[in-house]
Picture 1: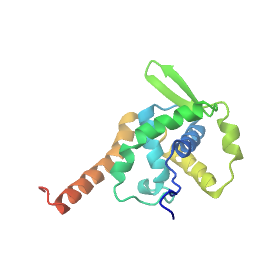
Picture 2: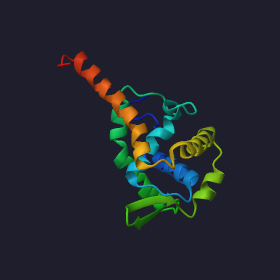
Picture 3: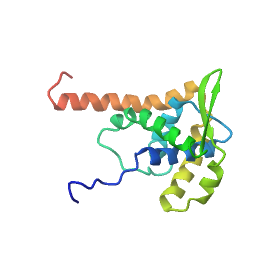
Length: 164
C-alpha cells in the first residue's frame, strides 16, 4: 500500500450513519437521544461482548479510545442521514431525540451486501435485547465496559512505569 492510500475503514460519517439508520429502523417507532445512540453504535459492532452474535468488527487494542471518539462521529452521521430523510430529529420535553426517517425502511430493505445484512440482523437483535431498557438498566450494562476499561488503563499505566 502506498503512503498516500489509506486503508478503508468502517468508521466515517457514512458508515456510522448506516449503523444509525439500522438501529433506528430496527427500533421504529422508538427514538433515542444522542448519548444512547453513541452507546448503541458501539454495541452494534461489538454484540459478542454482550453475549450476542459475533462481533462485526475486530477487537481494537484500546476499546475505550474507540468509544471516546464516537460521539462526534455519530453526531456527524446523524446530520448526514437527516439530509436524505433516513433519520428524523425531534425536540421533546426530554431533549433532542432521533428516530427512523421517512426513507429508512426503503433504504434498509434495499441493502443486500453480506456486511449490511449482518449489520441489520445485529441491529434487530440489539434493539430487542437492550433497546427498551430503562436508563438505569442500560447504564448497568455500559458500566461493565467502563470497569473493564479502567482495568485496561491501569494495566497500561503499570506497563509504562506509572504508579499502580
